[in-house]
Amino acid sequence: MRKSLFLAILIVSCASVGFAQSTDYNKVDVYVGYSHNRVDTGIDDSEPELSDVINEREGFHGFNTSITGNLSRYVGIKGDFAGHFKKKTFPIGTAQVDLDSSIFNLLGGVQLKDNSTETTFKPFAQFLVGVAHGRNKVDFSADVCAAVFPSPCPADFTDTDTGLAGAFGAGLDIRASRRVDIRVVQADYNPTRLFGETQHNFRIGAGIVFR
Image (cartoon, helix red, strand yellow):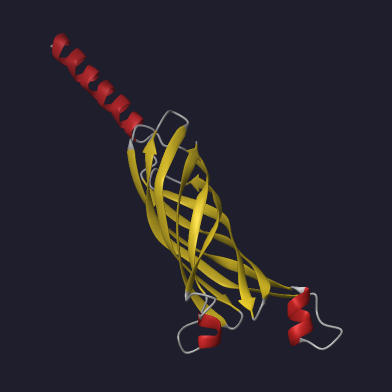
């Protein structure tokens, strides 16, 4: 009887310890990584004077950072900040124009992921909304000014706008150590509403997650 009672207590104790370990999860994740954004410029073949120099989609290089506070093993509240940049030079006659563009996203929302401290492969999904800020700066060379504009001509032109944005996507983290995961891929649909139009952008990235 005593042996049976002792065995029952041992089984319950082991089960309790195992359950506690399986529900132990990381409370905070901090991500830093590279990001590439295929930005929808809104320019197509119907605008031949622009489509010859600017593609319908342009590749922007940049960064993506985020911090996630995990409310449970599977659900976290996430704040996300990203910046993407593009410089392009195109000719006008014998002269050239420099276009310097940037897009920043400040987003927040929900991340779904198995945050267990013992999990090795961690696929995740995220649903984020917020704002985007776009900036286009055009620098005219002296030759362009002389050929196109009457004196005095503008040295440069800058247009900015702020509007709604979102990021809806998924990715995969792989546990590298007790404190570090490798984000091997993150892919998002990143719509923005800027300059009176909706841009259907797509971003992909990779980096490191610190716990």
